[in-house]
Image (cartoon, rainbow, N blue to C red; front, top):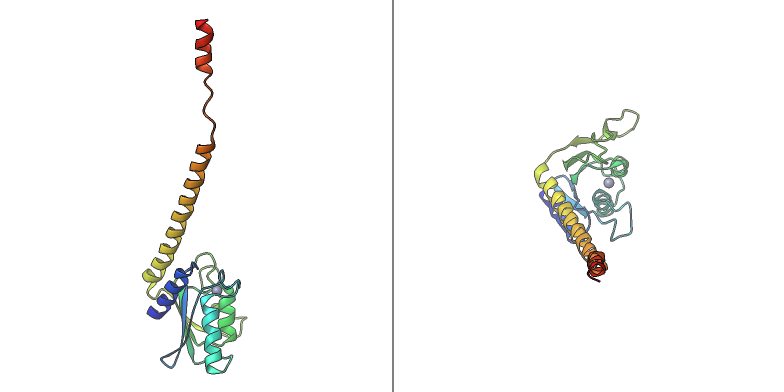
Length: 176
Ligand SMILES: [Zn+2]
């Protein structure tokens, strides 16, 4: 999971939501991947997809039944689907994702008896570190957005015409 976190930080360095994944086979790291849908103009470029593609290529097999996938964030529906197609043996994730998590947070595809493959799933591993890297990314992004709003607001204030001086004209009328 430490290696997956390194991948998450690599995603963050590229301005992507920091999620990292690692595929391990018989105790050996086969492939790594990090989230890069923005830079790659690819909605499917989640960390898990990148790592699964690289692992399948490295092993010369689209099925990865002896492999485990470590990922810093709970897989989404798309990635859970790819994990099933790859026949991954076990999924280990860090942070739960209450918005798109498909391992129990929103839906639990791995517990769905009508689907034909069920990887073993373990969540919450190094959870605090995995949540921390995401929180750092989003708080940085919120701060940048706030700075942009403030600088846009400053420009509007600069362009505001001076307030009318009706009061002084009344004074002038009274004086005449
Ligand atoms: Zn995903």
